[in-house]
Image (cartoon, rainbow, N blue to C red):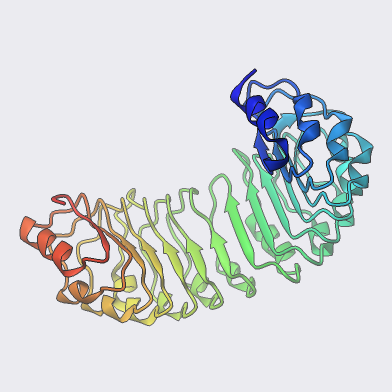
Length: 352
């Protein structure tokens, strides 16, 4: 008996969430007693079959089977009224048949090997979030436009190249889409990205991007923009138009010596900015005096860059919660002064 089963036996009614390790081959029968279980995560385990008693658990709302292949999902999934989140691994489109009947489904994650998304997904009228992870798909289906509540879409096509231009023509027709994450082979962002006017969060991190179009900054409703872990050479002029931006991540863009000249010139315009990540760019040489006009900034991370000094205004930014300047070339005097000037800030420097 392992620690999970011991925990269940000790107080089954206290269990609300269970994550089974990869080596599990079946769902333990002791789960029958977990009447308050809300989340069961079988992801990447060796479980091949769902026991009937799972659907007698009255509060089970999330069943995650990502990377866990079950070729014969039971049809009675649809009868479990409180089930609103499912993760499923599909090798063939027919492996998803039981999913399309779950009328209350709000969150769906699909992993596996299917090369296209069946039109049957259009039956999920309450779906809010769709994650397509590691699927070798080249296009997004037009049927996504028939999902009236879809607000969040995450697409990872592994080694396949998604046709982003065609994807944009689909996504622009999704009435409530506000969150978008794309990871695909050889991603290129065109000026047409600006057509997605409703976007609030855009994540294109981890794509080896070398260039971003200035039209990206026409998405003035963005609150989060993640461009991290790419090879971007330059931030174009106009980023100051993102007046609503709260989180900006540009970390790990070291491959082409990221030029942040325009960002630093317009940083004072980003007055809603709360998080700025520029760590591991290995190219940032200075911080502008106007950084103190970012009065809502809480986290500033410039680890692993080329800073030799900081502006006097930085010492006044006592509203910062975290300041990380490790792996730069700041002298010990500057480091000590920062620590002393910002006693309520978590200041991380090489000498302290």
